[in-house]
Length: 86
Image (cartoon, rainbow, N blue to C red; front, side):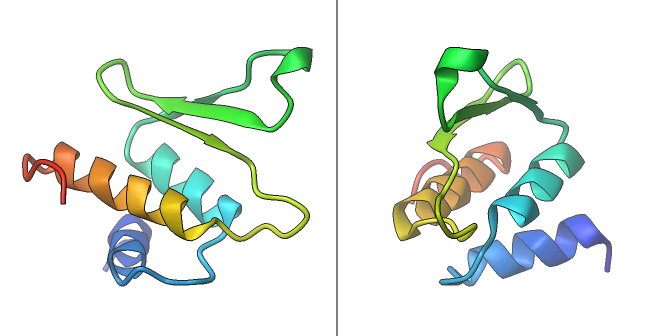
């Protein structure tokens, strides 16, 4: 099983400890690029692949995504697979 498949399986299990680093790796494996809006973006981050985009704030002080961010990621994965939103 590839790293991408492992991360997709992990995020689909709705973990409480999915990290921003894992998100970055997964998004890169899915062909998304990370974009910060310069110095004034603060913690705002955008991952896009030209067709789809995921906007979120980097979690702090911990590196763990909030439950709504994991749900947004699951919804994006469903859209990429043609399943629509949950």
